[in-house]
Length: 153
Image 1: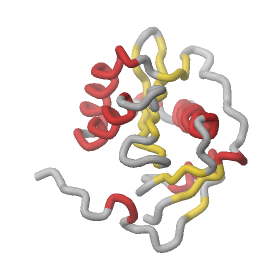
Image 2: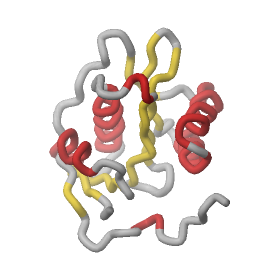
Image 3: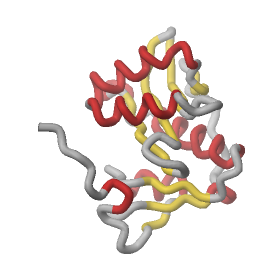
Image 4: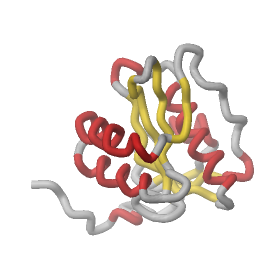
């Protein structure tokens, strides 16, 4: 799959948080909790990238929470500057608008930080990003930034 490009100056409006939860920037003190959850849900590679997002100032990780429980996350500037991701939502919470709310919260924050564009590397669902962020394909970009990435044995 080719990488995707998002024009941050032409984003859809940021949706409000889900009625029974909240979308917000993660606190630095939540870093270990969030990264451990990401590792358990999505694997060590994503956990490593999530850790990098907590090293940024301001923290470049957004979380969805309900009753003080983590439902999902979205990072940027983790694998490289200007890259969106990783992002994920607990399987039981999918299809409720949490993923799109996290995506747009992070992308709007990238725009506020001065980025004009975001790159989404190796997307699992290009259609999701086209629908919610008007992403377009970057031709001849596979494997893109992630070429040569070590594989876990």
